[in-house]
Length: 135
Image (cartoon, rainbow, N blue to C red):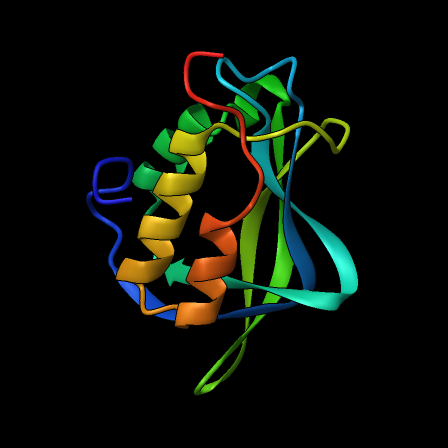
């Protein structure tokens, strides 16, 4: 995020309740399926919440290909230590399925670790099945 949104500070971390991290749109990814979230009443996703500026929002839309329709923005509720927050998240507009690349999982698990996610959550991310890079 520091590269993609240099003017947008981290606000807090929390849990996106009743959603799960998954992957899809394998035909759109150059090295595997792309990350997304889907509603699932039995799961939750650890998230970092940023105070995104208008300038950075436009840049992030480009990074996430929201301008092409690959991802769309949706409002979600995040549970934080100070209460619930309504924030927007990018959701992949493609079918769920396929495996992410090892490098994608590495980026996600490293980011979760840096943001203070619990060890069991990070471990589960790192143990997820994935494609080998270059395959």
